[in-house]
Image 1 (cartoon, rainbow, N blue to C red):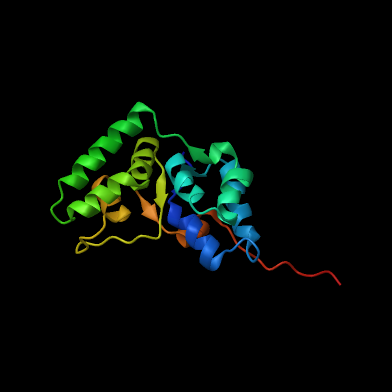
Image 2: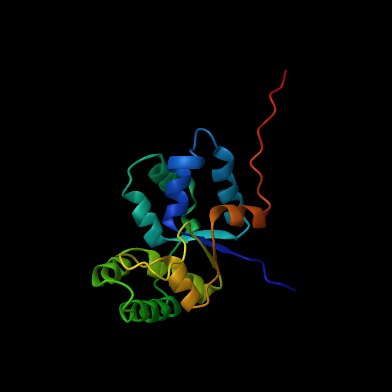
Length: 173
């Protein structure tokens, strides 16, 4: 029996959806789908991502604090996650491709924790970042995922895999 695929969402999934293509007032179905698949134990994020969302002080922050269940944002303090995080940071700081500033910035945000949690718990990372062999000024999540053999995909790929359809409700006459 094939295990059920589970997804771990990067902050940019929430932020871009809220600000660009799935705002709460136009696409409540997107947010409902996240919660429905969380209830099925398939979609999660981590506390560090929530911390980043809390910086916004907007409708997304409200959703993360008042609508999303506490179980949505996982803690990363267990030993396996911390051990993977240390390996990830060690790898990133050892890569001459990235500037010292990019390495320090990566260590200060949720990205390393996201990958470490996904690696230690067998989840796929959902992000809008793309891999880049040339980039120096930041550390793309997919570059690190590839190094540590963690699957990654974007929002739309995840929605298709989950069978989510955002359908216009028909008005009753």
